[in-house]
Length: 297
Image 1 (tube, one colour):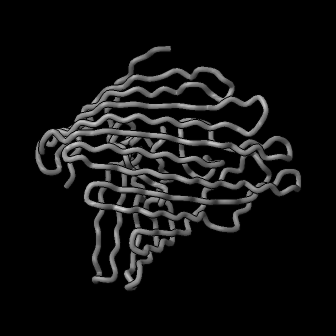
Image 2 (tube, helix red, strand yellow; image 1 turned 135 degrees about the vertical axis):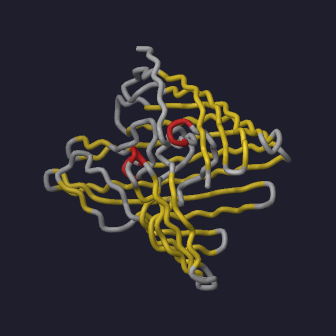
Image 3 (cartoon, helix red, strand yellow; image 1 turned 90 degrees about the horizontal axis):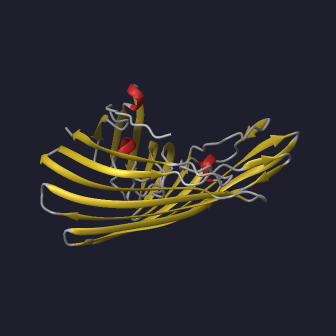
């Protein structure tokens, strides 16, 4: 049923932290957030430059993060539940060689209602990011596997994700787009507005195939005003007879107003359309409007 709710709160990604330089070869960073009013670790890592590359140890952003949208609703949603890829921040050991990165990351699991869960290896992620004066190209991949035990039988829950995205600048205008597809992305930690978990059907595991698409376009009017519009879509479907795709989409229009260095106001309107669930039932939609007020210091 239709209803209207007013909300005013501290954004979950409100944060404080610092970047630390020990030497030219050794740096670090810490950052704490304020999710639900409680302090939480966002970043906490050190990184050593050993000449031919760098090694990072600690918690930071997953390599499966594209950050192509500036949507502010929902704690800077950035279309991350609607097609813009994000696998969240996790503890990791990461190697960087120029534009290429590879990481062994703390896995995430879902027991799916099984008797037991066993994890024997980390997530593995790789990313290549090419940045030039007027464009950025990103390609990434992730893999995770673990076992669930049902009635004494071990079943593998395998996840893979392949993704590509990019952004191009045309003077004051810019355009970005991205897409990804994968299997069983829910247990992996890619949180989308569709049920992306596999399903235990007795002693068999029904895999879940999912994909996401997004696009955005913007224009920097001047140093004070920038405009942006974006749209995203996600879909997931179980590999089982009688299952329908569970999908959702979102679109928005915003203006970023810079009043002073570090001080911005972002009015935004948008629609979150939850489309159909896995049984083919329409889940409705929500219209929102508001402003983000932010000061960086």
